[in-house]
Amino acid sequence: MDLRELKALEIAARSKIAFSEGVWLVPSEATGGCYRVTIGPEPSCPCEDFALRKRPCKHILAARLVRARDHDGQAPTISSDAVPHKPTYKQNWPMYNEAQQTEKYRFQKLLFELCRGLPNLQQSGGGRRWTAMADMVFACALTVYTTVSARRFACDLKEAHGSGYLSHLMNSVSVCSFLENDRLTPILEDLIVQSSLPLRLFETNFAPDSSGFSTSRFVRWHDAKYGCERSSHDWVKAHAICGVRTNIVTAVEIGARDAADSPFFKPLVEKTAQNFTIQEVPADKAYLSHDNLALVDDLGGTAFVPYKVNSQAGEAGSLWEKMYFYYQFRRDEFLKHYHQRSNIESTFSMVKAKFRDHVRSKTDVAMKNEVLCKFLCHNICVLHQSHIELGIVPVFWGDHGVSEPMPKPSRTYPGLTQVTGIAGPPCVVPSVARQLTSL
Image (tube, rainbow, N blue to C red; front, side, top):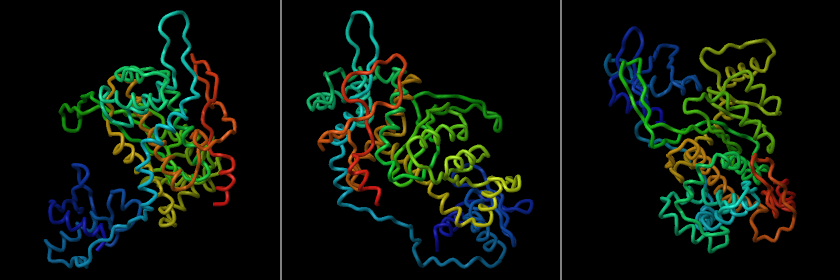
């Protein structure tokens, strides 16, 4: 028995499956609707699993079981003696344990090296000097990493100041006002890109997707289907793309709460292509378009996006037609590439499990910056684990005695002036980079 057969048994036993107008109505476990299933010589089901595999899904198997049970037919042979085997993946536990046990110390050190070359806000006239941009970003990212309230965060600020990561000791509540600064947004977006560079020798396949982070706001709307008013938490929608090997996030865009996914494909892929070599981009059906396929092809890669039920072959000899027939006639091979996109789902799960699936900020700018800080913290944690497991050495860790000059930030910010001293992070120590090319 596999997992689909086990789920089919559960659906047939617990759900009401009815036959109407020549189809079986099988309830969905995820939503309140039903799937219209046919189980004849050519079974069909509108679910995603059947559309991808073209093989009986759990809904078809459940309908067959109910037909056999209620109409004295012959049920499909399902052995219930063996427990379904769920695939597992090996973990290097000694290295994993070392990464987890040293993460908090290394996180602060790497974050400090990543921020210390940031430009400061321009200030004219007298009055109290504004907080340095490096201190602002460090404090914002650290408070998101700790996941504690602003007042309880005071102890972490004192510890960071004592370690030399902050130029002065600030009030922990003032960190909330830092997040409300809209000039922080492009800097955080650029730091996410910069923090992914040490892994550009390892990542060639990238998966995009979007996910929402709930807020304390509520929104109401009229449900035309059921004729009633509904309300739910509002959310901040983040569009991200990650490497499928290490789950490093290479670009993030924050869009409107109901923004479609496909328009964000181009900026995410283009920003990734500036620093990485792209070979494959697996994505779900929301990103299916001629322009998106052509974009990845122009960059020297291949986009593995499943076609929809109503998709046609299109113009003869076109890229669309080639990928369409590849999807139709070499489905198993296509799906091996496509299923790499599950890594972006894992990335969102990692971010939400570690740094919470909601934001505590109240204003639009602060909520956007808080979500960006979550992805920045995720990247730093991935870098730390990759440092232990893969042996990479980012230059901005200061305990390796690297004397090579570091490049300046890749972006200029309006209203900011560059501070003197070391600027921005590079990717990998040159000597280490030469060693890694042979891996």
